[in-house]
Length: 281
View 1: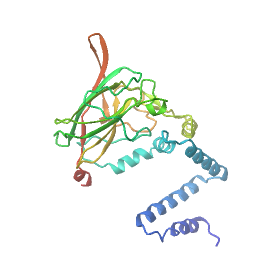
View 2 (view 1 turned 60 degrees about the vertical axis):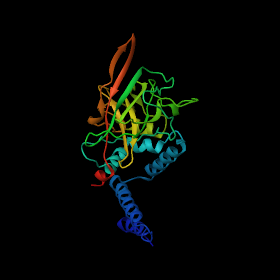
View 3 (view 1 turned 90 degrees about the vertical axis):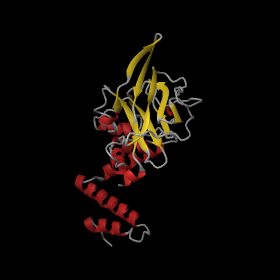
View 4 (view 1 turned 135 degrees about the vertical axis):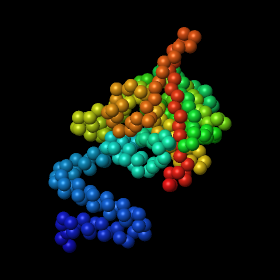
């Protein structure tokens, strides 16, 4: 059968008709239609097609257990933030969500309130604190707060050959919803740009920098999971974040303090969770 143009697209879409999942048929049909429309819109050449195949192949080959190049690709194309927006519709009182990023690791060390989780990471000491609240301003005791961040050299622990995690831990809020820990002051850093994603950025005249931030993932029974960052106010890359993750409400001041001749920084930020029912509404 000689299929071309719209007939070819229709035949490929119809090939999924026997799937037992209506959602699968919907997603694959839309994917095929948009993919074919894209190729027609740009008049895709065979050389460009094979260049794209090579790019995706190398993206998979460079990915490891500690480096997810496909997540990075989705980040720099804005797909991650688009998906975050679609999947996290919450009341305006709730803390906004942002990208998960490629450096989360399951099974981080447990910390107690006030512990130093830097574990020798280079950087200026920073006290991170706040409360986990509901949308009515009431504290949520027993919430699980997971946090991770880069050191002053711009590296996460999983990017280095270390014996133990650094700047990474999980802790539980107290009866008043408080969380508190010591880490290091976050700095701006480049996303990994020594692979295919870096090639994509350079070809587009784009930079790889992310503004200074701390990652949080917060969960509690009856509440929607929150994945977010807290960004450092005044960072020069807030308006040009390589992964489009900055939101004004997530920017906080990291203030300098001196105590007994020692200098440290502090940031206070409350994390507000929406209930599962609120997100469904």
